[in-house]
Image (cartoon, rainbow, N blue to C red; front, side, top):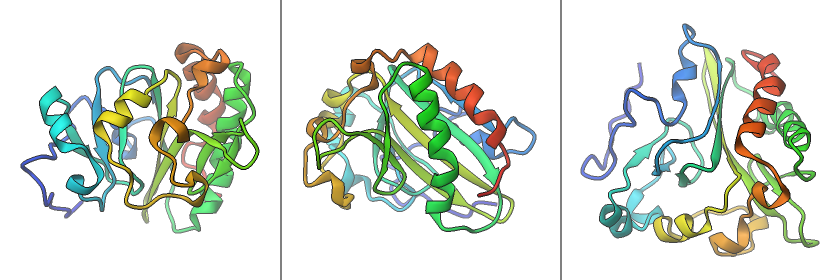
Length: 219
């Protein structure tokens, strides 16, 4: 049982029964893969993050945007229509995170290519990025993991539609950032696969095909 107690209950609310974060794939009674487009805008912080440090809290409140906490690590993200979330249940047991990303990221990259997208490279802590300018990769997917004895949960979010305006409004500059970000603001650090002709429905189909074989697999 998860003994985590939310330290900021006045701001961070449970995600709800519709499982907008995809964490339900951890349940062995359910299929271990879910690939979907979010149906509403929300903000999600990592398991150990302080929302008052990572978010533009006043903007979230003014716009009625809910704040949720996911069970995995990683940084704060916006989920919104025009994005594609990947939730994948993998085998249990502890491995270096780089081994998990080496298992998953080639399948993700191949799905993007099959959907008409550009070549991607792994950057930072499991991110996928496009090299639009030498030395300045631009992020198209952020990822997080939670490893356990019974299973490992992978969560990733692809930016298909341009969401820079949402990031700028609801997210602060992160307290921790990968070296490849180089201090860039959200709109300069991230890009959208839609600019390369990728469409949400096509990408979802390709990811479903490409990731099915990885359910409950280990590196």
